Length: 174
Figure 1 (cartoon, rainbow, N blue to C red):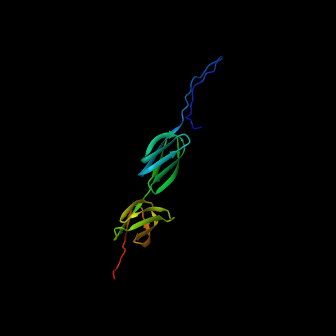
Figure 2 (cartoon, rainbow, N blue to C red):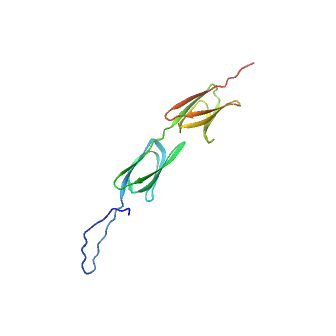
Figure 3 (cartoon, rainbow, N blue to C red):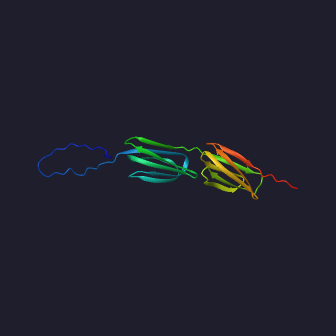
């Protein structure tokens, strides 16, 4: 059922006759995958053909007709897509996630931070100041720490935007 149709003229006579070799061809279509920005890895899986690409912006390839699962992964985001390649046609799969970033500053040079996703998963940590890029849009919990003092705040990341936040630890003297 997934092969190209085949037809020929057939004349039947008495005696033994062979049709010879008949090469049956598999139906194919073009799979066109684009990833912008380029994905850390793309995995394309089908019943008869699969490939894994790293640091890829996609591919344009003639493949057997069938259902395919395409998985795209970035440092902090991944998603699966399902496509069906049809004979003699181009099947597109456009992967275009929109990420944002955080530019975090502090008035103390030895302050540290922890950035967590809404579900509590640690996204990044280290010293301030820092710029964290490639963040999916949404809410994040940031904890800034300096000499045992903490400031915790919820930050919202918007697509295609870098949000700035400044954390100042004010100390006095007596």
